[in-house]
Image (cartoon, rainbow, N blue to C red):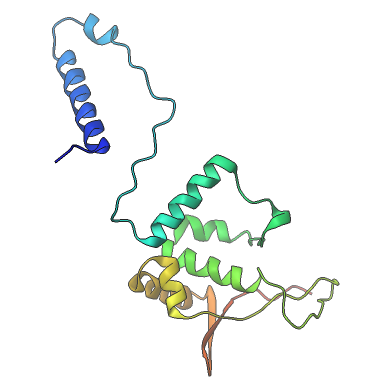
Length: 180
């Protein structure tokens, strides 16, 4: 069976490591201090494994495109302003919890309400509640168990609210009451 590019690179890295280790064991310090390494400017992306799920493959290609071309400008996409507390959530909570909260923010604040009404400041009202099924969160989090964990913790800690409707569950961000 032919050796893959990753296997060749791994073998090459191992040989370089052995060589460097052997050089440090020699009695002559000049071998260590005069050794020159040429770091690569940028490592090539690892070859895509056939074991990637469709979701991982899609996300990997999007991430690669962001690295090459940049993020979508706010003039061309759905954008969301995040509350300052979200940084703390990112720093301290587990990934599925953050994914669930962010998705509910996107599904509510990220969309203008269908009613066409305006708020007190003359801006279009935003959705308050969004109907999202467990499958939606499973796709987002990567597995049913991670989706369940994210929803359970977010609900228990009071980051989100949930209500039952005839079609399923609707979710909402738990907001502070505005100060008068």
